[in-house]
Length: 124
Length: 430
Image 1 (cartoon, rainbow over the protein chains, first blue to last red):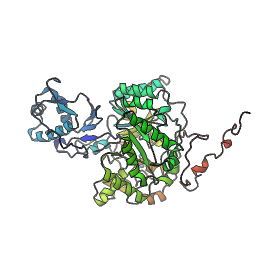
Image 2: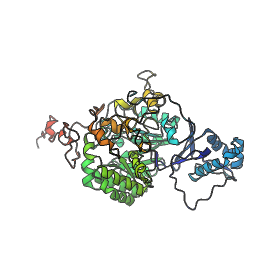
Image 3: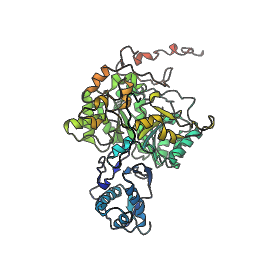
Image 4: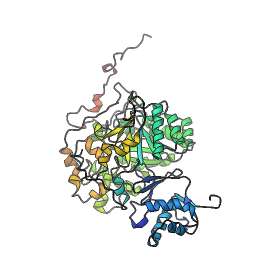
């Protein structure tokens, strides 16, 4: 999606089987694939605003706007910081195993738009 | 309004498409336009806020800062500042700094007259600030006829200053008219030349735009030309999602359609705060009919000047109503309704068409019948237009005959200063 009125690039998650509202994030061809086995965290440049259906995500650096379309996904994004990898985060947040793949897809989208980032030794 | 748009109980669905969630509103807008002043050094014929003269009741510097504090509290991360010409406010640059310091990013629209090399350098050095230069023709001839003499050159100078200062990602903002649809490639070339991003938006019959819309809005074949051009250029050309009425073409012929939010966001994800603090459903709907309230608190003592935008956004009667499911009216049976959702509320309102009927520029052709049957155009509820002569007033390319019986705007202006000013023609003895 190119812009929701503010002309800010919008990225949408597709968690829990729901259809994304629109496409539009250009993914560079040389993108490193999302690796769920390493530690992740919400980017320090990102702010979450609670919404009735989940949260609005705003990146102050690249001015991208995104939405987390479910409360459990909001909980997962917040919890990434406290766990060594994505699967353990999902287990801690009690995400049913059948939905893990959808969550990994959603997190991969957020990683591509730098909403979440790999946690390194220095940043933990 | 209830009579026109029957409301049903508000019951937000769980999950589903984002667009369905947006219809029920957000806890804070994602696109807030804040017009800082009605004062403007120009008198563009299509000004959607009928700007010109400052309003004596405009928010003070202290109130404007309190409103920015409120934006920060509500996590409104980004606002679009406009006017009038926002840079004529003496505290404009102070407010810009204040907003950025309080995590409220700013994109401001300007005619460019005041974007000097020094200002451009400051802007280039400030994070979270974005600039948008208005340009309504790729040539001076087309641009100046709408925006005023010398405005093309001023915009070009501003663009050059921004480029020279190393500013990145600034915008060139174009209102699409029948005179400039044929210049889309030239606009793109200008943007590329300055390293700017092109932004195209729809001409609305709002403000003074109501008087010229009939003469300036694109012809049906030009709408198609615009749609095809936008589809072809896709990424990289911004639209503010203002052409969602054109997405009906996609439903018709299987073209990929326009990216973005095909939804009227008024009062749901979008709103406007005007210079005196009035809150309207969208920037194109400055009219009492779409006024939700005022940011000056109604519960605090009258002279306390306490700012309370949050209550207006969350609880005003108008916004609550706009967030209720609405009837598509005459459009419901149309095969394209899911794509265009009936088009732009403001466009319908200001040409006197019912809000639950087709858009006046409906690409299926339902607009023309609606226009012919339209009721009386609503009278404007505010007008800050200059009353005297303006130094560089635009000289329209064609005679303006917007509606039968209306005085053509070109002749509505006094053609001699003496008609307005008792001192006109007086010159002190030399």
